[in-house]
Image 1 (cartoon, one colour):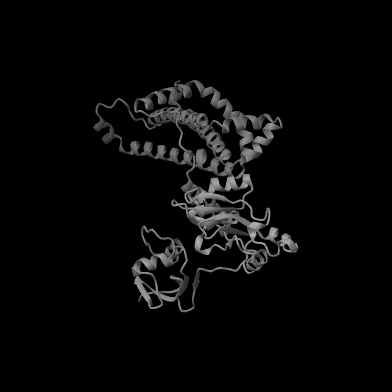
Image 2 (cartoon, rainbow, N blue to C red):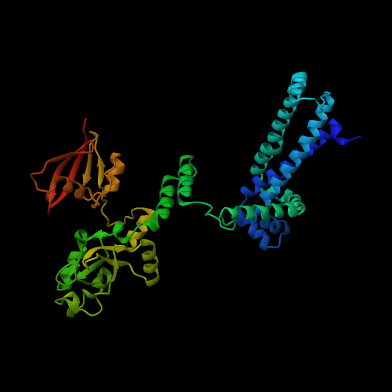
Length: 442
């Protein structure tokens, strides 16, 4: 008797299909949840199953092709055998004279066939795919090691067919001008940031950790100009300053290194470390001498362009043990300075020591207004106020408000309305708006 006429044969083949499906889909789910480093360590120690598992994990394309092959093959066989046996059982003749007669004469039996196939689909999806994937993902290591030999045997048996499928696929895509060997990056930067945000929302990582990871991802996009201390805020010493006066100046500030300039800030000749100054202060011969007259006190300083990427700058400063660099603009003038601490703060956030004074550019008030410093970065202003100031050639709130005024700020300037907010100018000093109160216009 033809086995395809026996309904039991159809169900036995269907059961085999579920078992094979569950092995491959369960194994695939298991290896996605494995710690590859642990597998590599065991493989290096000589564990055979770990070596085999690592081999399969490093060739995911082969596993995927094998799963697809067995899925299509068994789907075809199960469909053929079950459909034929069911139609035999319910006495449906496949040799009906016309398609119309076939459907009109056997409506109940046709519905029964459809219901049986629908039940097959539910059983296959549940017990052949979803259940094994759920179980194996929870017990990834145990499942992967238990099934690795069966999966490897299936890959070997299907290899001639899957290899032929691969060759035909590569040949076909080449006809469309596509290189089959070209692979895109597995994960993009935006996808990593999205994963980090999702992990933070789920409480897997803390907010500070999420910010640090995002800072690292954005690290290579920033230049020295983005993080430098502007020339106006540089604490520097004239090279004619006496050592004792320099020590007094340094004691009034919180830095450890100070640029030394000749005549003006655009001619920086080096820098002085506070430790070196303190070591020389008790020597009588240096008491009345200027900084440049004391041997080896003023150290050489590095110069970099504004456009220098901070990732390469960080590597260079690490290699050459440089802690401070002078940023020069396209006209050769001093634009600012960058320290190693500035670069590290781009990753870990602000670093304060016991001598640093906390500098808050943005201070929310109880009356829902916001006090802002004139040097607040515009990116921070946009984020806090929820507005878009568009493309602009300035970087601070002072620069933005000055452009709206159309002239250098004076004490007479009181307030500016823009983007739905009222910017009240509280103080102006040295042609710079120092403090602003921001209120939403009702």
